[in-house]
Structures are given as structure tokens and as C-alpha cells.
Image (cartoon, rainbow, N blue to C red):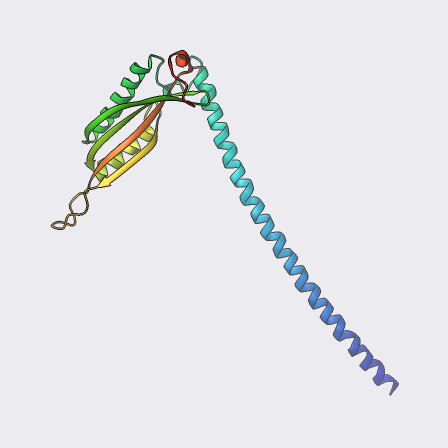
Length: 195
């Protein structure tokens, strides 16, 4: 009987020990999962920080390049120094040439007040256009890839709607687009400061 009591006592001791070990396993898995999710969150935040750092570095490089046009290998990204009227005329001429190259009708062209962002002097223009959807998208792509660099600030597209007679007919758009280009810092004295 002594032998049975020790076996019974052992089984009473094993059962709670087994429960404690299972509970410890679940707690360990939970903490591991929390650590894994925190690690993933940290990696996402670090990736976002790296993107912001890259953007800040690029903007800093662009600003530095705007201040030193003669030694800048990226000087082709900026309009040459000149009066705001001359630089705006160059900008609007470039935009009109890109539009007509894609068979887009220029309805109106006007200048936009110059502004300063950081150390960049920006000259702007707005165009009202009409053309096929494919040509308008090609125009936007060419503006984004243009040299000197052009920045689309506002874009307003309106469709003439789908044709009820021919659903395969090409869609035409009317477009109002506002574009800016950067000018070398030499024109600081000639540009108004509109921060």
C-alpha cells in the first residue's frame, strides 16, 4: 500500500507540473509573437524613416545644386537665370512644344506668380488643353521627364464622357495644368519672395 500511495502522490504532483509547463509554453509563445510583431513594426518604421531621409537628402541636394549652377553637373535641371518674364516665357514655350508634339490643342497659356520654396526659386505657368486621353497621359509623362525639370503642382482633368454610339471611341479630355520649373539662385534679386 505504501507503494501505491507514492505512485498516487507522484501522479498528483505530475498533473500540476504538466499544467504549469503548458501554461509557461503558452506564455512563452505569446511573448515571442509580441516580440515578432514589434520587430515587424520597427522594421516598417525604419523603412519609412529611410524614405524620409532619402527625400530630405534629395531636396537638400537640389537646393545646393540651385545655389551653384556653374559647378553643378545637374544644371540641366534648372532654367537659366534671367528675368521672371523671360524664364516664364521659356517655361510656357517648353510646355506648348510638348503639348503640340503630342497633338494636343493649347486653349490658353498664362503665367503664375513666382514663388520660393527653401532655396529654390520657382517660375510657373498654367495651360488649358484639349486632347485624347492617350495623348494627355503621354504629355504628363513628358512633363515629368522634361529637362529643365518641370513639376506639376495642379492637374484638373475633365472627360467628354463615353460615346453612346461607339463605346470604342477615343475619350477626349479637357485639362487645366499648373507647372513650375526651378531657376538658378542667381535670379534671387529678380524674383519676388512668396513663401
